[in-house]
Image 1 (tube, rainbow, N blue to C red):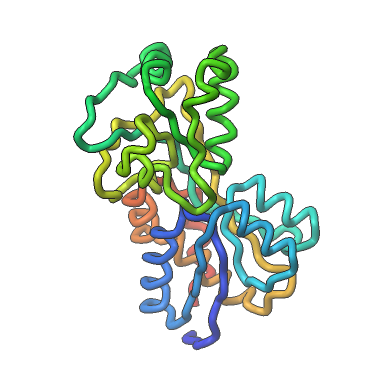
Image 2: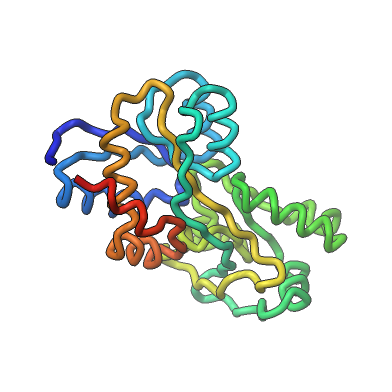
Length: 241
């Protein structure tokens, strides 16, 4: 079934490029427009809490849960879209420190003149990791927290941050940086990005079609190409009409 009704959504920056690509493919296949505005995750949650109307909200899973608990999203409407791990980046022309183990990464962090991370969930977890390592005070004057909506990689490219941490999806494709690789498995920080349906949305049927579309093999591959792992299964394909 083709439809011209529009799904209006908001997301954090981590899924901006992914959702833009999926939206274009969804419109071509199903004939339905999905318009997604991507901003800093904190700002997106604030706008939803303030009562701004959105059909679809895509944020870290814990943020979606809070919006559901507050009545801003429909109860039971959360669906997990993708999982994304944190990677480490340096400026393209900079030396490449060893990050292959927890011990090596700790030494690289201590040696860096500045360390950057985001205001999102990965930044919170990194701060806890540094605390567990016992180096919070040593790093206090070297930590650079990117403003909401500003990729850490852009600060790395500009020379404002020597060692940058962020979701791989937000580092991929940025000019002027080298992605060294993911955090070592023992300390990897994985964020699940989930979606919820706005409490006042009338686009439930369209969103069900979207969910099915996102579970198709082609969409799963698109998610992988953006540095994430799909959480959706082929069971959702039945929603496509």
